[in-house]
Length: 370
Image 1 (cartoon, rainbow, N blue to C red):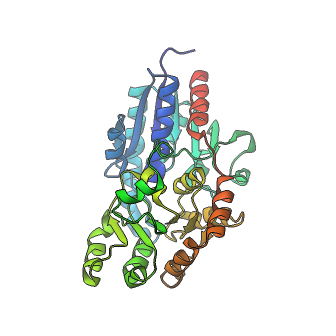
Image 2 (cartoon, rainbow, N blue to C red):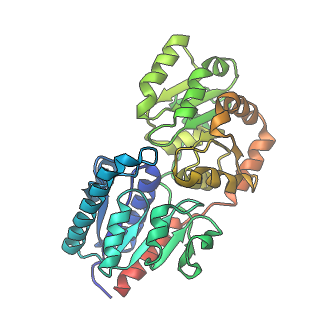
Image 3 (cartoon, one colour):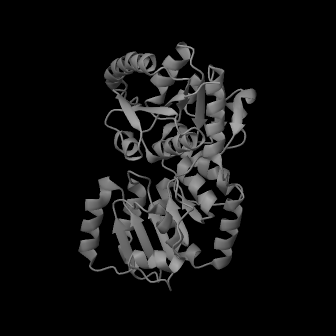
């Protein structure tokens, strides 16, 4: 058994990939405090800030995603991919990892492929109910594949699959604030029902448009709202609010750093159907209306959402119907205690409570076989 583990964790692009990766790294550190962990991400993407902020080193690759709409633009993407594979090979030669972990996102493809070619054991973490193209390609040589949903043997070899759930952000379950204290921290009224609107770390255009076009609905709803717009939409949201005048029932911000308090304040959540977010709702037993993004590979967010809807664990509104249906459904649902309780109970049944530690154990076992 080795004295010091050396582990590469690769992937990113969105919070849905980065938060689980950091959670896994933290769990490995708890088991092996002297473990050396290096992240490999994509240049210019969110992980290049978030990972160092969590206390880990990261190296960026010049990789980019394929443009499915304009195929002619992919010539430069292919050059970047080749360049990324060469750089990934150098990183692996220099760092000499015992195991490489892929969490999805642009960088995981070239990093894990080169690790496999060089005989390094690899573990994949597939967060969605519909496997991504990169993970399906990498799965052939991966030793272990940690998944969050049942039925993933239709994508991967059964003997490699471990049902672990998705790791969530540390600290989400550790807030000591009461619901009343949490609501007051947003300048709102604890006596009123509260809806939390989030569109992921970057924002969600359709959800934000629903709110901007429905500000008068919010004013007269008798309900209050916490709205995370994402950084790309905040200026537009502020302008829309300014145009209709003061809205004391609405707290709007580009980014909520303390999501534990926001979740504690919420009686109902409106969200995209990213796998990481869904795992958080399950763990926190939050009633949720899911609006899957149509702009993701293989429409995997709709599949994530339907996995919950089929168990009466969430409500679902199509992106194309959201402007008409979303806010009326939210206002109606949040004022129905029986519906909220049913959704909360059913989503709680889908929670995995120890995902990061279980995945970390698998990583450490693989490392010791190298």
